[in-house]
Length: 382
Image 1 (tube, one colour):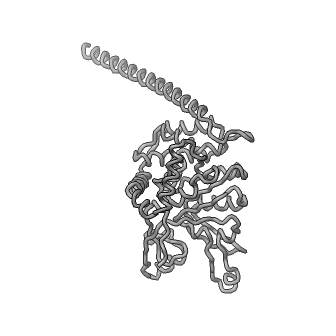
Image 2 (cartoon, helix red, strand yellow; image 1 turned 45 degrees about the vertical axis):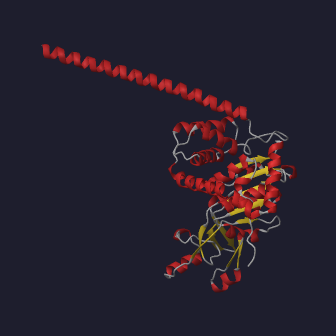
């Protein structure tokens, strides 16, 4: 038997709280659109991605299925599994960990999307499809290191599939589609080149990471790494309770997510922030609301509040704001705070006006009631 590969525990990663928060939020809500992690080498980016996958609960897949279909979701099955179901064949289900599929830097479009055997399709009318990387990543994590060095077209295809949850391959009038729901995580070093703004906008969240400056925390990084390297089994065992707690926390948040509500005032706040921060299009507004709701779920609440929106804005807007070359890539926190304060003042003014209108209405109703009573008394007296 081969030796089972071990992974550094997610809970044991020192610092990098924003990166870990962004990853957890995407685990809670895979529809956030993934996360782009920008930063220097050696800042635990790839370690965190693999650790997250190992942390999450196992999933059920159809045994032998090339597309990792969920045996409980007939509507989302691949054509092969669906054909077996229609023949009343019982699908064997097995449990396994969520997989991390890495995209090689030199991957071709056919390798990513998959290929169709056109000769069989044209001559025999049979669709023979060879799955690609997107099929392997279904119901898992697609990890794209140095995403800024990929061909723009390939990045666009990846993000489109992540957003739609479906991969469609078309060749000479022949097409094949399969589910491709995955969490997309891209990492890059900005010193090696940037992504085009149009592609940056397609990532749901973005965080910037850098080396830890606190000497005590850096010592913790060294100690934990050496402890893990010397005895991985004992190190993982020591962090087992923290891992189980975080996994249960994420599952609870996933179950709460469909119940999260928001008010019109929260939506007003989000749209005002997007306008004040000068972002293009409407993806930022949508991503901010979805992220704020996910943050509320992460706090195990059922209603979105202003603090959730503030935190969401920092994760959603940093890579979407218009800026000049060499400008600081981080979000302008003072500008964000001012936008939120302006909204509070407007909301307070609006509430006061509404209260004033309601007060006037009540006064008028009281006067009308008094007049009616006076008329009735006069009629009775006459």
